[in-house]
Image (tube, rainbow, N blue to C red; front, side, top):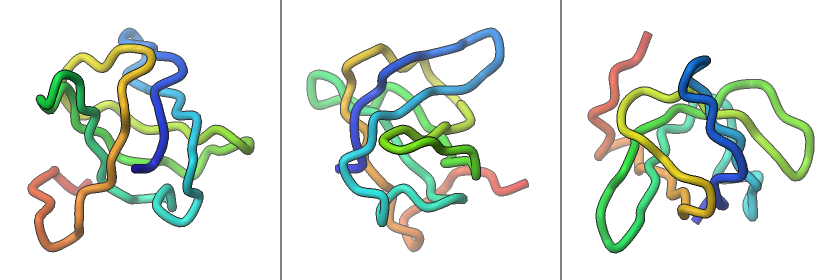
Length: 82
Protein backbone atom coordinates (compact mmCIF):
# COMPACT_ATOMS: atom_id res chain seq x y z
CA UNK A 1 0.00 0.00 0.00
CA UNK A 2 1.24 3.47 -0.92
CA UNK A 3 -1.16 5.45 1.29
CA UNK A 4 -4.65 6.93 1.37
CA UNK A 5 -6.44 9.63 -0.62
CA UNK A 6 -6.39 12.90 1.35
CA UNK A 7 -7.90 15.27 -1.26
CA UNK A 8 -9.38 14.99 -4.76
CA UNK A 9 -9.48 17.81 -7.31
CA UNK A 10 -11.53 16.44 -10.21
CA UNK A 11 -11.48 19.81 -12.02
CA UNK A 12 -7.68 19.92 -12.05
CA UNK A 13 -7.40 16.11 -12.37
CA UNK A 14 -5.10 15.50 -9.40
CA UNK A 15 -5.20 13.63 -6.10
CA UNK A 16 -3.28 14.34 -2.89
CA UNK A 17 -2.09 11.12 -1.27
CA UNK A 18 -1.05 10.76 2.37
CA UNK A 19 1.76 8.26 1.87
CA UNK A 20 2.84 5.44 4.10
CA UNK A 21 5.69 4.37 1.81
CA UNK A 22 7.81 6.95 -0.03
CA UNK A 23 9.64 4.12 -1.78
CA UNK A 24 6.40 2.95 -3.41
CA UNK A 25 5.46 6.56 -4.21
CA UNK A 26 8.31 7.54 -6.49
CA UNK A 27 7.55 9.82 -9.47
CA UNK A 28 6.11 7.98 -12.45
CA UNK A 29 4.71 5.09 -10.39
CA UNK A 30 1.32 3.88 -11.60
CA UNK A 31 -1.18 3.58 -8.75
CA UNK A 32 -4.81 2.62 -8.26
CA UNK A 33 -7.38 3.28 -5.57
CA UNK A 34 -9.42 0.48 -4.03
CA UNK A 35 -12.77 0.68 -2.22
CA UNK A 36 -14.97 -2.29 -1.28
CA UNK A 37 -12.50 -4.63 -3.05
CA UNK A 38 -12.97 -2.75 -6.35
CA UNK A 39 -10.64 -0.51 -8.33
CA UNK A 40 -12.07 3.02 -8.37
CA UNK A 41 -9.37 5.00 -10.19
CA UNK A 42 -6.03 4.94 -11.97
CA UNK A 43 -3.35 7.56 -11.36
CA UNK A 44 0.34 8.32 -11.87
CA UNK A 45 2.55 9.76 -9.11
CA UNK A 46 3.95 13.18 -10.09
CA UNK A 47 7.20 14.84 -8.99
CA UNK A 48 5.31 17.21 -6.68
CA UNK A 49 5.60 16.22 -3.00
CA UNK A 50 5.66 17.63 0.48
CA UNK A 51 6.10 14.91 3.08
CA UNK A 52 3.95 13.12 4.06
CA UNK A 53 2.03 13.90 0.85
CA UNK A 54 2.53 13.27 -2.86
CA UNK A 55 0.41 14.36 -5.80
CA UNK A 56 -0.86 11.95 -8.43
CA UNK A 57 -2.27 12.86 -11.83
CA UNK A 58 -5.74 11.37 -12.24
CA UNK A 59 -5.91 9.22 -15.36
CA UNK A 60 -9.34 7.64 -14.94
CA UNK A 61 -12.05 6.95 -12.40
CA UNK A 62 -13.39 8.82 -9.40
CA UNK A 63 -11.34 8.36 -6.23
CA UNK A 64 -12.76 9.44 -2.89
CA UNK A 65 -11.09 10.74 0.27
CA UNK A 66 -10.02 7.84 2.50
CA UNK A 67 -9.64 5.24 -0.26
CA UNK A 68 -6.51 3.11 -0.14
CA UNK A 69 -3.85 3.65 -2.82
CA UNK A 70 -1.76 0.78 -4.17
CA UNK A 71 1.17 0.70 -6.59
CA UNK A 72 0.72 -1.27 -9.80
CA UNK A 73 3.71 -3.52 -10.58
CA UNK A 74 5.47 -2.17 -13.69
CA UNK A 75 5.05 -5.46 -15.55
CA UNK A 76 1.29 -5.45 -14.90
CA UNK A 77 0.62 -1.78 -15.68
CA UNK A 78 -1.63 -0.96 -18.61
CA UNK A 79 -1.84 2.76 -17.84
CA UNK A 80 -0.94 5.08 -20.71
CA UNK A 81 2.51 6.63 -20.57
CA UNK A 82 2.90 10.15 -22.00
